Image 1: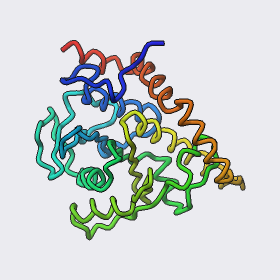
Image 2: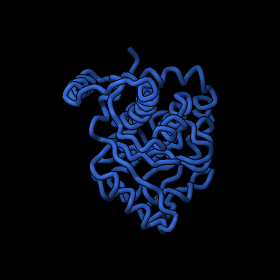
Image 3: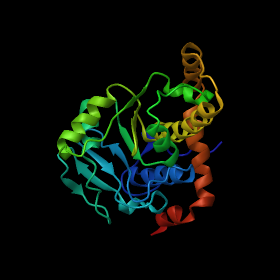
Length: 250
């Protein structure tokens, strides 16, 4: 089986192994999985060894190209501008990465299914087996328009704690992880799990026991579910998003 590029294999520049290309690929995967966020939402990736991250601009997820990705310092100074300006709403990416050394990727979406579930203010439960990856790892952050951007960033990082997901009622969600690949796949799967939970709540369904969910989660990690999901979606992009791969020849 052909090996697609993963985080450890990234090279310098904007080639297929670059963080710029991989972030663009991740955004397009999210779009194809129903997590479009109009021109809001961001995908960021920590720059190894620096107080900085690569991040995407205001645009639809399916139009992202490597050239659009900017490198931004934790103080929000643009260190390497992309061809489109970085979104101004990225304070919390820096706040989360500073608070969580284990986090290398932050994804914020306004996905319809997740945002709808967030409005219920229900506790996330495992109503679908893939949701086991998030058992006891979902929290909530309620928007507060009175906060300054710096205050909001700190508040989101605090609300997230050591969890994987922060639901934002009437807004969307924030997802964090150790790699771009894992976080992208987990965001896609979480969206699906929310869809199942909404349907189950409407029909009287019952959640999986947490102990069972934790056993499933261990199995998903052990057998490389996230890695295989990334590879499969990467393969699909070659057919669905030729403009992304055509950008390599420019």
